[in-house]
Image (cartoon, rainbow, N blue to C red; front, side, top):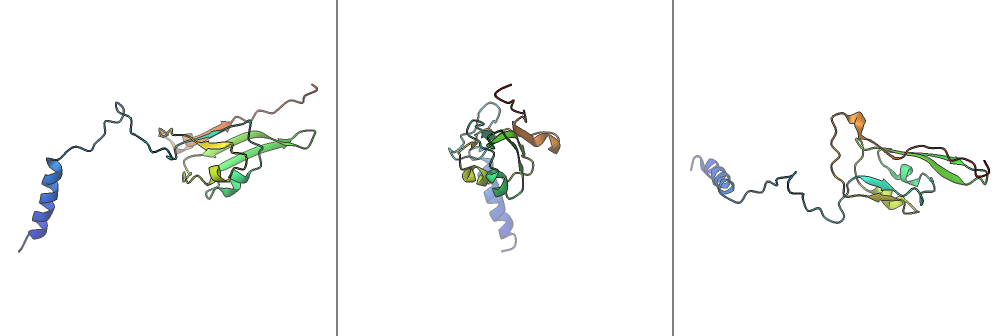
Length: 133
């Protein structure tokens, strides 16, 4: 029959028209996210030893780890930046962190007007002073 495809398509359209709405009213009603949702990132600066493994494991080179050495030649963190505009949110950086310092948060509201504003500074690059000063 001519037009049978059109009739099948209209049947699907009419079924959705009179069916239950699936649109969520986002600002008023927050979505239920699964527990393993990959949102933004957080860094536990007390655990981070600035090894740079997370930066090396990132497929898009999104992470920049800055470090320095103290008088005991121990490395410490001086800066930690991420460019979330280029991030895949794959979680390889979190999985590869040997000290379990990098975590994924459920924060998903990351929209900005300009791509340059997607930079995330997890440690603001403050130099540590010497202990005996």
